[in-house]
Image 1: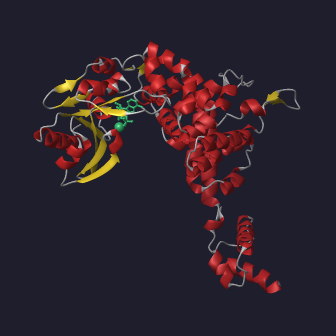
Image 2: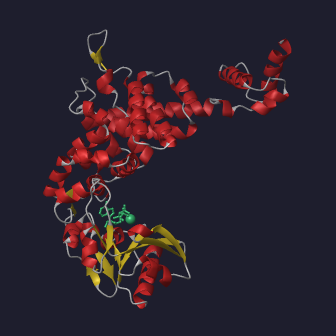
Image 3: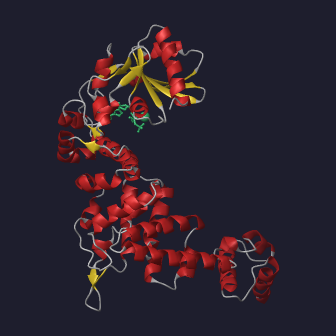
Length: 443
Ligand code: ATP
Ligand code: MG
């Protein structure tokens, strides 16, 4: 487990100690090392003031990351190490940031300001593990517990509420009772947290091993972040294929899909449109027809509000929109493939499988998905072209053949694609050029 990150962190620590400054590894990297996991980054805490740390690493690349808060980043052999002076935090009048940061002379004070016991341990070769708040025991029992009074700690900084849920999911830990109660009681304080921080934590939460449990236990927290999901709570599916209400089915689907942001988000949003799309069909039976389009719109609104990246929004929306298209349109494979960007075919299959697994008879539903997938792959094998980009001719060549620059080029490419799909032209440069010339010459 003593990877490059940990080795460089130790090197930095020894350098500081040799200069006479008490220093420790702290926080996430200690937690991960004690769990036998590889830390992805390392934080150090030290009695040295930022200027003193800079002087110790005068021969190195030092970045003044947050010098006001006592943090500088030192890069050793390509590994960035955050080195922060022991600090305490004053009052928090905005519910998110301390009014002032005071440097401290003791490690214990520094550990007390940290969020959870498992994140409030330090270690150094000189002292071994320093654990004044019972972090080791909580680590062994797989428990997330605030350092100090949870209500106070969450009121100081509401982001901690979401961090608790995120760690419970990523570490697959339980949340201690008082901490959990305070999280739910103080959920509205999350209004003070920026959209970017909320979405980053939410994605991590969704991708954690304990996502299903945390999304279920803390669904009120989830509904504070995504109010639209509340309509799914307890909403009956009215359908023999489903044994769960919409939210329970959603959370199951999340747990069955690989833990990648786009996939987990797509699973989270895939049925969010069901409650609004519900209506009594012509046959007198309940129907969710159109829920994918409604869901796509809701997902887009939510993700815009939470400031997700455009790339994520685009991909998740396509997956939500298409997640049950094939199940509703058995003969729609070609149309689907034409609409679907190539790189979203695999993600769509993951979503359809996860959706199937979260239904009442998963084996039967899964079998259906596999059959549809085989059909799609066969179609791809047979089709000379599915997208304009698959054509053996491009825009530049069309212009050279006399197609006017601008919109006409796109229109012509679409026309050629149709000709190829309908078998009226071969997908070769010569055959397509002939088609083009026939039209250009006529004009
Ligand atoms: P990971 O990096 O694996 O997500 P981490 O524990 O390293 O987990 P960071 O956000 O990198 O989390 O923070 C480093 C440490 O700083 C934490 O372990 C914790 O001790 C402290 N910390 C971070 N954010 C807060 C906060 N909002 N309130 C109190 N302490 C915090
Ligand atoms: Mg970290």
